[in-house]
Image 1 (cartoon, one colour):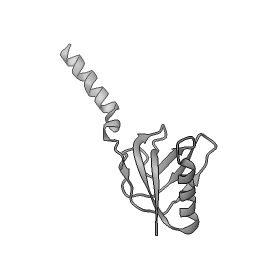
Image 2: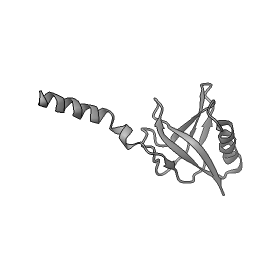
Image 3: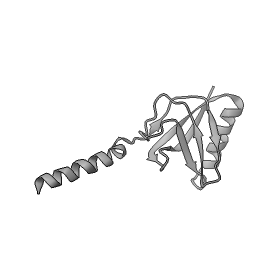
Image 4: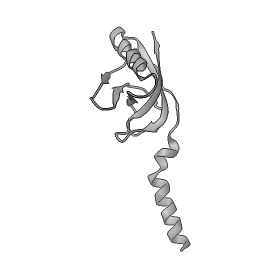
Length: 111
């Protein structure tokens, strides 16, 4: 019985290990490669960051739900980054969607 419980615990740990590694934090400043409003309930964008603190499977794709507070302003900042060539960084929440994209909760613009 103890062996069976240990095996189940090990399998569970492996399956959910990506959740344990998920963290919130700021990425580095980079230029926005792509901003896509795909017609779903969220927009997605690609930032070629060197390190994504979220630990999500896809390290360079991010998303934000349109219904979340401030999402329209964050979209505007990302769009301004594309238009002006300014660099942006994002604050990731540590939450990953089914595609492995990182959820964001803030955007910062820099020269």
